[in-house]
Amino acid sequence: QKEVEQNSGPLSVPEGAIASLNCTYSDRVSQSFFWYRQYSGKSPELIMSIYSNGDKEDGRFTAQLNKASQYVSLLIRDSQPSDSATYLCAVNMRPGGYQKVTFGTGTKLQVIP
Amino acid sequence: GAVVSQHPSRVICKSGTSVKIECRSLDFQATTMFWYRQFPKKSLMLMATSNEGSKATYEQGVEKDKFLINHASLTLSTLTVTSAHPEDSSFYICSASLDRNKYNEQFFGPGTRLTVL
Image (cartoon, rainbow over all chains, first blue to last red; front, top):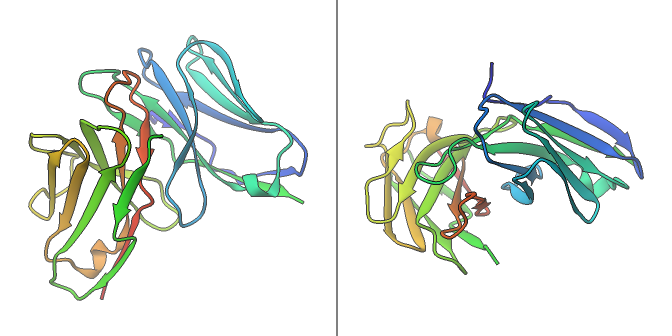
């Protein structure tokens, strides 16, 4: 089992719809979780961090964390063509001390105008 | 805040030369910086973790004598690709972790595209 698993996509959604991106992780004691957006040819950009079970909202983005199910998701409301990118889920497997953030392989999102 | 710069953004060199890439945290101190490489349409691959004032920790399979990392200050880490060869051509990206943030968010630099002829 991969440490951080994402569906590679592409996930295609029409403009204005909700895009739902999912991620599962293997380490039960993970404490911090991140979503990055990476445009083609560019470096990743941090868009959401979440540390507690439940939802965290920031503008059109909502991150959802369920530690019992080892599952984290990202919802993008009112999707825009500019949201088309690869979204990377990242999990900090050992908070503090020797830290190692493990990245998933990313889900490619295509927002169709 | 949390801005990371990287220089140069693009470099083309001849086989056998060495290339140095600088990574700077501009508005925060980063005790830990990370170096990644990414091939086209592939995922990020962590190469090494760089800690200020100590030796870097390399991931399995990464040659430490080929990829020299120096983290001389809390705001600067450098990666030197020694005796570069065409197979070293890749997108190299650094990231820095906020010093006071126990959750270890990483902020990425814009990356350096290395082409070895």
